Picture 1: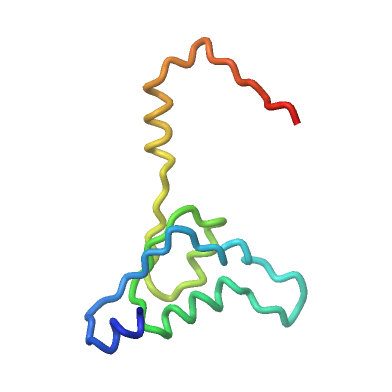
Picture 2: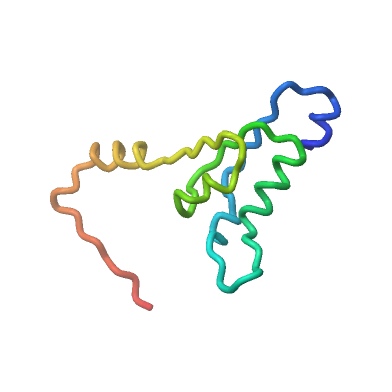
Amino acid sequence: MIDAFRRASAGRITAVIPYYAYARSDKKDASRLSIGGRLVADLLVAAGVTRVVTMTLHAPQVHGFFTVPVDHLTALGVLADHFLGQDLDNAVVVSPDF
């Protein structure tokens, strides 16, 4: 799809990636191993992406994989507002039996 947009002369292409799974591969275990997250980021940019919107990145260093602007969205504020609006004074947490 990115290639089709680029060939159609799109001025800007924003990739919306709800879950960037390759963000978990942010460390090298041994020398000469590639970092998959960086490889996928480079592939997106080579295809023509000019901006990335994603959620729940594994770590802040994942922003460094990209050479284009990255907007990292989080739902923490929405979740916090929800639980602050609940009456949790007498809440009980029950652990499931495993």
